[in-house]
Length: 360
Ligand SMILES: Cc1ncc(C[n+]2csc(CCOP(=O)(O)OP(=O)(O)O)c2C)c(N)n1
Image (cartoon, rainbow, N blue to C red; front, side):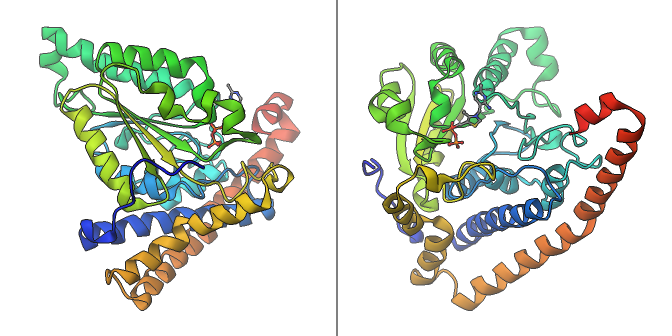
């Protein structure tokens, strides 16, 4: 991999509370993935796709943006973003088991298809790349509203309304940038100077297709640099501090009305594409080892200790607390909901064949 253009910063640049909060969301995200993987192996959920390896840049994005004010078009890897924006562990587990009580979609969405009305996280569509045009449409709505006096006066700064300096975040993997929607959206975002922040999480694969096979030249940020009004940065997305700094500048650019921004974050994908995939079939061992060495869940606590931000004991206590919460949530409402969902499925199977097709 080419070294990222931005050099990783030391931990000292951010205050202690911010650093600890970043780690909290990163760790919770990974452990929730681990818990869901366990539930999948127990046949309590039907599918799992993780955010493992993407946590650092996403925790930073969630910390910097404004939930319920800015707008969010995430994709399935963005668990740490949603946790940092305020989504609960329960909401995630209820969606994972497809519970009727799932606050994101009432059990209608696939797992990791995030959505939260109160946080302005717009429910995800499964065809990859759909989110780009949705995000630009959202930003364009604000742009148009600001130019129609009757609408601007009525809708501005109200709950769920439009704010002059709101930013729209859209996230995707490197492979998804090959789709037409990405280029169509970028054209309009740059043409109208819309406040859209593109966060491209480059884990070097689209399922089994390596980035250099998928993307011309192998670097999406190199391809988009000629777009006018576009602030383009590249960063080590496994370094939460470097990610924070780069995203902070990108968000400021959008919020100040200077046009869209594009952050190309180099991340890793240590858990295969999903639980329906086995990356050992196509990813070389040497690359898997190199990725393990960059894993932010391993490297960040070492950095926090080394820089005197927190002691090993303090970090261990925090991890134990998060583990305990996930264990109790997974053993509580999510499991009950899962058992309830099975009962409903069984009842449906007996009574209505069409329901079975939808439910399975
Ligand atoms: C339009 C469409 N084509 C194909 C798929 C199947 N699919 C789901 S994820 C994925 C790979 C996406 O890769 P990338 O954008 O690099 O994101 P990553 O999963 O690596 O984070 C594919 C091909 C889909 N969901 N939608």
